[in-house]
Image 1: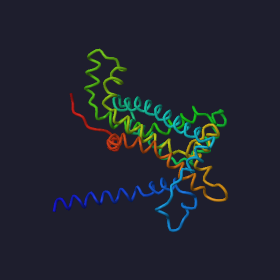
Image 2: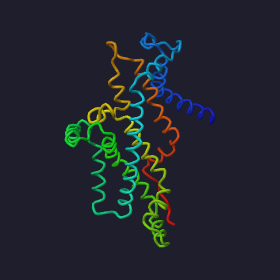
Image 3: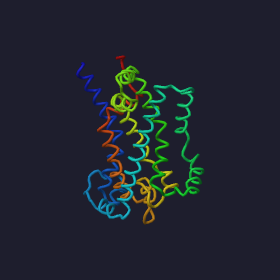
Image 4: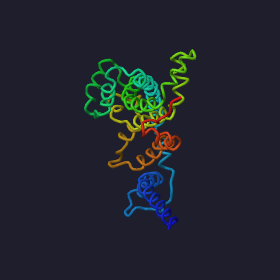
Length: 275
């Protein structure tokens, strides 16, 4: 009975997993179909694969620019955000400035604002200061949006690291730089990785601000998907399928490699004992 129960349990898990994986499988399979096969009714499960969609995709002049921009903006913004967030979270966790809870709420409230609500003033500011279509300023904008959530995650991890570690480091002649980066940071590495992955996914998928305050030189993959959706009087399904199949590889790879850190990150830290 126990074996039967376990078998049914794992069969159910596989069924749920396959159900949620079905759209991804469909788009990947569609990338190897012709337009006629993609639009066939009923859908074709048996077809002759073709690489023409990928040949046409990699033949686009702007493809490598868009992929490079997505990688540059995502990695650059998230590295800046995680570094700044770690220092801010350390301050909130260790020194507990007056009004810490209210300040943490204000930080998180930034992420509660919908993008369309702030896009107009941001656009006007970027145009006025000449920051539009700039990798650096778009990267810093993404970092600004990524910092609040990272601070919340990292503060939870830092709260779980006993202050005795700090005291021991200081008593033994270590500087605050040594305590922060040599003693405390290694213990919150899972939190750093979790914050990195969560924010990487956000920046990697961001479209609105890239479209409005970005430009020709900063366009990313979501931008390419938006402007390339329609062609020849209809939806360009072959482009969407092949581009999406390439687009989802990096986040899936990162999530697979660091999945244990993401699970820990969802709990906002760990509880550690005293030393």
